Image (cartoon, rainbow, N blue to C red; front, side, top):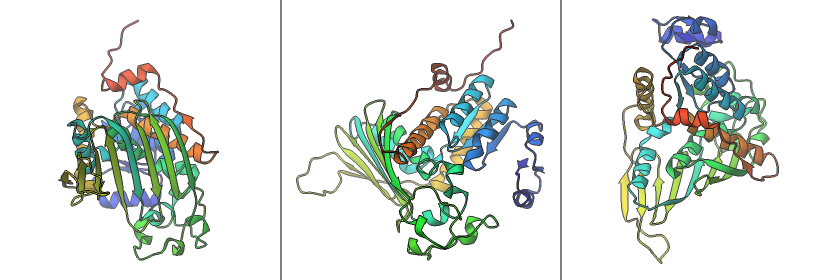
Length: 365
């Protein structure tokens, strides 16, 4: 079954999945007796839909980020806890080979105890991907530090083994706000306007009529285990990839390229001559499907979780902590850049999700 509020979306669904029942009414979907559902709406509608599917007892896959406010993200977790309905969040990068391999090196002790994580994200297609439709508006995303950065914030937390407790940031709408060419692109999709030859960024065309999100942002994080981290995001670079550097007490690792064919360098020997060849090079792996095989693995994990409650690499608590860091960093950069403290989740929610969302047996009064 497919539920889409737009006529165009329903028409596309009917054409691509002719055996599916297609509706524009969420109530019809909720009453259809489904075992599981994917919530793939724009970000600011994630909680609005997920809360209802969870209350209907339908195991719910919610795309990242959980929502665009911390209050909405917490409501999703609270609803999953109260209903006992299984909740899964689509942080597919926990299955990406570059991330999995870097984490494995860390867990093997290759660089000792992690003390710092840095991530630089060069979003070379930012103008086409995020500044020509709903992503460009705060009302829909809060900001791209959350919308785009939720992936990397979650990865930083996963590699470091902790969650952000304090965050600060700076940012600006440095380029795309000054581009005069604007158009309402609601009649088109990204594939209709994407053009790699549309360069430089100042000469982009048909940007969204409203642009009030930043195109460059930098955040600093203090994690609850003492690790220090930073994340930088730029949407007008010529190249498109992300670079992680993880520094430990016995060395450091860094990826060059984030997909198949790239490499992870490991330094564990001291050098006095500037850049030195790494002590070890690890080729980044590949898999079948998008993001180096991460996308199908994510779906397999979700379905196994629905069927059997199998433990997952993803975590609703981790997803909430990524939202919290992104939202509060955005609040900081739009203010005076001062630090914001991340509020704790209630202990009962932490215990419930840490234990894998165990089934609870109702007790007769």
